[in-house]
Image (cartoon, rainbow, N blue to C red):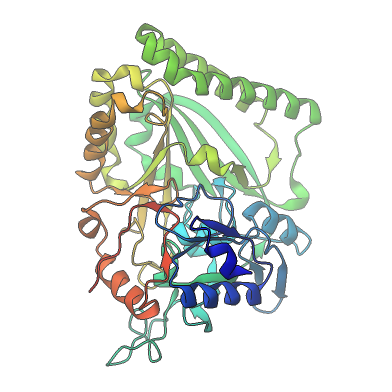
Length: 453
């Protein structure tokens, strides 16, 4: 059946239900010399350069819970929201907080999902991976007594024992994730403190965003003001839940904000004089919506749609460079104010056990980094008018040690990628060993970033 579908010479999409179905697809693809792109089912996939698309959206089972080790195992097609909902019955959660795009597990691992307090690497313990040769192997992080990505003196496909350094941020080209095991922590709630202030008051003391569970801010460069949100942990039985009528009002104002936010790029482009007023409207709506949220307790994860997250671009920056970046963007925004009607979302993360849990293609190198997300260049109908402007904006971030994050995409492959990510050469070497026939292509980038060693 697979062979007859391949004969029509177009991209075919398959939805395997278990590990056996995936192995059949891999076997048939190798027999027919076809290229495979796989993804978890939630990310905006790039189909260019592939003969087969494998979506794991039908693999959504809860596999195992280990109460002694405090770990849970799920299949790769389960979304993060579904996973946490299942974990609630076990009185457990993940140490992943704040604003989180609701990706499937496979997508989140492949692009190195970033939350407001850290990345998915902090929670991940192991993955069961299907290789291009049909092998099924458990991947883990290297321990302190092992060299990164354990490898024998003469690396071959058989002697090579891969680790999660190649899988997390691996962009789906080193193997297909069957299941993933995560470390749990006891379930709890969060309570937010929300206030607005001049941007300089926060930037000079950015460490305060690390206080509590998580912290992030909405920055409006044209208003020179920020809305700061910081959360602290609350025990489950002490939480004061939000009344339904306050939840309705909060949802109403967030819906109004969504409408203004989506319309702002177009209105500001054609009527530049309205740009600052549009920023002020969004600022007021967020403050109004947040006023109905204060003094109440919530789950510490706030899920947003993957499509909404991927409208924008996301960059990692060293936290100590945040003040320089803000000054550079503020000056840039004065010249290109008609693009800057919507806010920039800034969060500061702490990366745990960095030495051994650092993926080869991770966008961060420091223990404390900040992420910057913006949708200033998301309007496809007018983007052709400012592609050069977007490159100019990204150059401001790159000169301050910034690296583009894979989780807001698909990301365009760049010739500079080897310079931006020091582990890129190592990642290419591991890919050569794991997939010598280059069966897998990445569904998460536009273009092919593979370089033969």
